Each structure stands twice: as structure tokens, then as C-alpha cells.
Length: 333
Image (cartoon, rainbow, N blue to C red; front, side):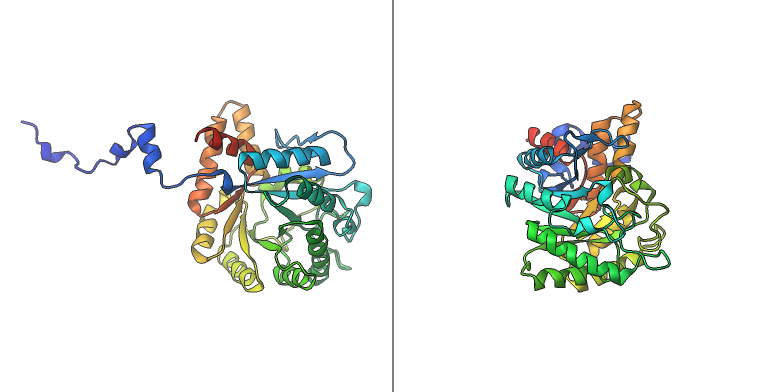
């Protein structure tokens, strides 16, 4: 006689039996409005320039950037984060092109704003590294180190010109101490109280930034370990979080995303403001490269990485797959 009582009564597998069942009980869901598209616009080009380390991603012309913004909007993507790539001849020690009202990023903000208005959240990278001839995120002192407080003055100017151009959200990514407070004051004092700050609160000095250097034409020699965070540290990230919130951050970010899901989860548990995570260039490149080799299923890997970031606590995910994934999610409704 079979001892029926010896079999398990609780069988979690019952809730995995069919795609419909799994879909019904899913605890975490992606939506197009969770996604933000990072986009690069390069000065002085007439055709998009492919980024070799990031297959499928380009440095846009002004015209193709407008089209990319419209495509993202139509797919249901929440926002677009703009990075400007100036001509090399315009780079200097102070990153002057970054505060020129007619600099490439400010022009691009106005272009996108004219195209999509307020229907798509327009965000801008607020940092000097794209515009300096040394490639660092700030101005240098006499000893060649990044001068924190002198850089803050430049960030205040950047915030004003980006806001004047019509941006909805500025993203200070340089990891200078006090940057959120200085930028908030600069915006408020120039009549831009409604411009939000997405603070790059947790930004590690990561090997995964490699392909991004090509994307923005970086002139960097060396590293940014003296101002970006040490990958070994979590308490330090929570201290940065407390400071950014005290200084007036409207939203906070963890960057990179995938290697730091524990940090993302801790940040999400600790705050009552929206939390973003940036799936950066190296994360993108790894999946694309492995898929090209036939080692992984590309679409499933993309979905799994994004779901993991969302499950860890991200309200918003910056990803180079934003439009593609949003289109797929829309098609699946």
C-alpha cells in the first residue's frame, strides 16, 4: 500500500505549471514606464557613428537623436538621458563647452524638447568629463588632482544652462562632495525650482564603464578612484545617500546596476524617494558579446537582467535596451 502521507502537501511547482500560471503569480513585472533610454549626441557629424564596444548603440546626429526620442516616446519609455559629445577641438581644461548655451548638449536638449515637449522626461548628464581635455569629471588643481569646490562652481553653471535649454531633470554624475546642494541652490536662484535632480548617489569606480569611454570620446588617462566610490564599500554608499537627500535630491541612483544589486536593495529599503539604477555600458556589452557568440539567448538574458534590477528595488532603470524592450512589452499586451 502506498503511504500517501509521505508525499509533500505543499507543492510550489503547482504555481509554475503553465506560462499563464507563471504570469499570474509573478511578483515582479517590467513596464515600459520603468525604462529610461541613455543616448549620445555628437557634434559635427552627419551620419550616426556606431560604437564598436556597444553593438546597436550609436553616437547620434541631432536629427537621429530627435527620431530616437520619438521612437522611445511611442514605445512608452519614461525618459531619455542625454550625453553630449563635443568636437575634440572644443575640449579644454575647464570643460567650457559644457556651459556654452550653444554647446552640443544644450542644443540637443532644445532639439528633443521641441520634438516631444513634456511627453517624454528629458534628462541631462551634468558632468564635465565629456568636455575636458584631461577627461576628468572636474577641473584640476596645480597638482593635477580634481578640485572639488572649483568643480562645484562649474556644475552650478552647467545646471543653469541645461535648465535654460528646457531639461526636466539634471543628473549630476561627477561624484563631487556637495554637488546636489550646490546644484539645487543654482537652479532655485535662477527660477528653475521645478527642475528635478536625479542624484548619482552611488557611483562606483567600475571596470564596467569601459565601453562608455568610447561612447563619449573620453580623453581620460588614469582612473577616477579619488572621487568615485570603492566597490568594496556599502556603508559609504549609505552615507552618500543621506547627504544627497539632505541636500535636496529628488531621486537617487545606483550605478552600475547588476554587480551591485545588494546595494540597490539596501538603498531602496532606506528611502522614500524614487530609486533609479543604471545598467551601464559594460553590462550591455557583455550580454551582446555573449549572445553574438551563441553562448546565451540574447532576449531572455536581457529580460532576466532587467527583472533582477527591478526585483532588487529599482523604480526606474536606465538601459540601452529601453526602447527595444518597451516595444516588446507593448507587443505582448
